[in-house]
Image (cartoon, rainbow, N blue to C red; front, side, top):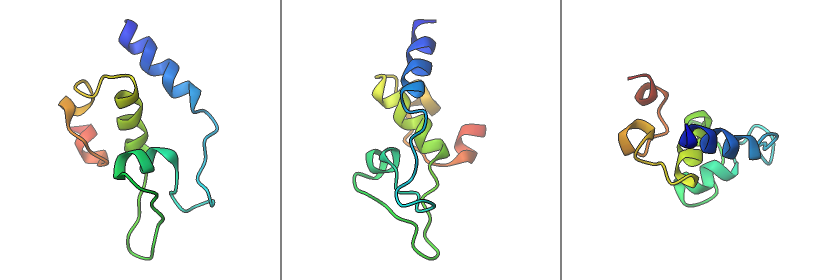
Length: 80
């Protein structure tokens, strides 16, 4: 349970984090995932719902637990 508690605690630290500017998908989790700031641009979007989870597990040193260690931003990968 220590890992679960650690992951939940880490996620709670980021409560209230938002995109800047609003509706741009520019958020710290995307910066960590892509290695640079990203902004939605026409047909290219950077949703961060799964990236948030990936980054929290990474920050907790538990990358191998999240999607068997796969780096993914895909909701489909999480469902399978």
